[in-house]
Image 1 (cartoon, one colour):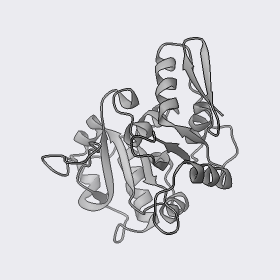
Image 2 (cartoon, one colour):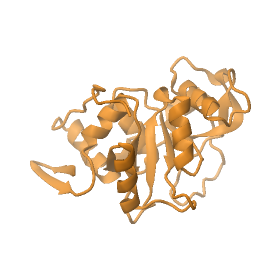
Image 3 (tube, helix red, strand yellow):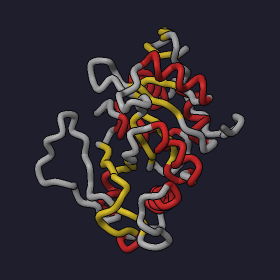
Image 4 (tube, one colour):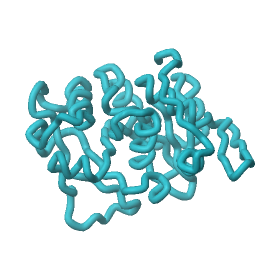
Length: 231
């Protein structure tokens, strides 16, 4: 079940997990599944913290997703790494703010393998990285999150950054859209089955927004301790 807060009232949504469970999983280096509203994209993304990217986790993500790996980060972080917008005029229907793509500058081969992409993700999350730590273009697609997170834009980009922050991690995530074997997008019923099969918490962006608002109001505290079993 999923709990959304409205003052002292808790609204329970069936088939979803509490946001706290997703925060714990993120802190422990495990992936979570986040679904947005049916009237938006109506899609579910695998999300995990970029600093916890491993070849195995990246390979698993590539296997079950479209294969397009994006790394949401704050605008200030994108600027610090010299990652400008991909285009001057963003025509994306949902306003997804792609920067130029990139690879790690050192330690990769072609940049496309799970090992290479995991390394690039970790470098993007590393506060000591500089513009020279990456090359452009590449095989990872950074996304610039809006200031204010999911409260301002209820997208997977902002959800990834907010979840990382709530988990006490660098606010840099990894996201990829879940698809069926035929390449079509997974919807909520299939996302529930996938999450149960793979032991991933499943939350909605709607519940995450409510959690963030309640947390900032002092009514709710994130649980950064990664005390659940590793997937």
